[in-house]
Every structure is written in structure tokens, then in C-alpha cells.
Amino acid sequence: MDTLTTVIGIFVGILFVVLLLAAIAPKAYVVQRSIIINKPRQQVFNYVKYLRNMDHYSKWVMMDPNKSMAYTGTDGTEGYNAAWDSQMKQAGKGHQTIDKIIDGERIDIRVVFIKPFAGVADTYIATQQVTTDTTTVKWAFASKMPFPMNAMLLFVNMDKMLGADIEESLNNLKRVLEQQ
Image (cartoon, rainbow, N blue to C red; front, side, top):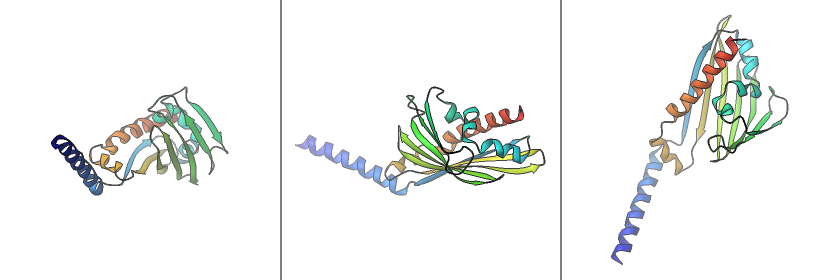
């Protein structure tokens, strides 16, 4: 009986610590990166507003070239949806939908992850003119983690982890556009 009491006590203690950490941990995170592309703002925007163009620059979309894809609506317009399903665990299954477009400035996209983990992220790609032939592109990714899973945010640096993927994607975008 003493061993069982000790095991239960340890389990309750661990559970208490996890719940305490989750109570003080952030519930949401935002990751953003930007890059300067040597192309006019409207040309850059006209490229990034089409989700299918992510096939050429997004690290996440390019991860599994064998994934199955399904599209609904007209690409480059509000309501367009691109759904993916991959056998690769890292790519998983989900869909992204264009929520809002401010022509020449910003595209808002809602990303819904189904597997390997369920979740929702709001992301946007914004363009800002630096000169007539130079554009800053900013890509931001925001999401929330439910209690008590949010305790992981104390130990996982989402800015570093996702930021590296966004940087790689933006560098790909720069290369693609500047070669046009």
C-alpha cells in the first residue's frame, strides 16, 4: 500500500506542476519575419496573393511533393481554399483559406491543421513599397494553444522554430521573384 500511495503522490505532484506551468504560460504566440525584394510592390503582391504560388516558395507547402491537394474557389480571391493531405507526419493534413485581401497591401489566410495535431493559425503576407522597384514583404503567423498544452510554450521557442521556416520561405520567394 505504501508503494501505491507514493506512486499516486508522485503522479499528483507532476500533474500539479504541469497545470501550474500551464496557468502561467502564454496561451498565444506570434511569429513574423520580413525581407526586401527587388521588385515593384504590385508585382510582388500579385504573386503572393495566389496560394498556388506557394508551391514555389513556401517551405511547408513544398515539404511533400506527393501530397494530395484539393482546391475550392478562385485562387487569388477571398474564400479560395487549398486543402492538403500528406502521408508525411511533418506535412500532415489541413487546409488554408484566403479570408481577406487588401489589394496591393495584404492577404489574410486562415490555416486549419487537422493532423498530426489539430489547430488553427491566422497568417498574413503584407507588402510595403520601399522604392518604386523595391518591396518589403512581411509574413506573420499567429496561433493559440489550448490549456494545458500551452505549457509547452515555456520550453519550445516558437519564434525560433517557425521563424526559421518563414525566413527560408521568404528567401525562396525573393529568389523566385527576382529571377522573373
